[in-house]
Length: 155
View 1: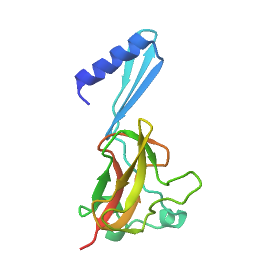
View 2: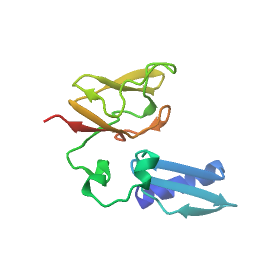
View 3: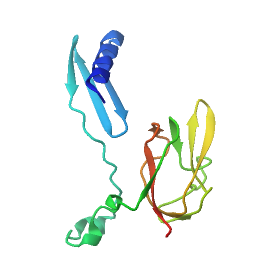
View 4: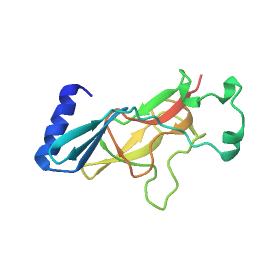
């Protein structure tokens, strides 16, 4: 975010008289807390998606190259949200997810649904490969261009 955008957010918070405002755009997050009418801007902190790791893997010493962050692999393709909306990983609350980590997907496979303006938009894979990570939790809001899944393409 630019300084001008942050200043606009401060003015918005002051005009609406909210106590705190938090905005996330991509990897940038800004939190504005108002004390009276003076604004305190908390330094933007990059948001890092941390994959869930089994307890045994956490206890293991980190010594080999194989134990590095799997998302650091440059061959991975990030499947990003084409719209702003709410992320759903299954067609219904009681249904199983469209895809799970480790699943093989082909071009055209439905990966998730993003609800935007009361419309359910199926997000399909544009690549064939293996789902390495799911980067968004079910029912969470997503931004345009936000990474939803990490995919290792088939060779």
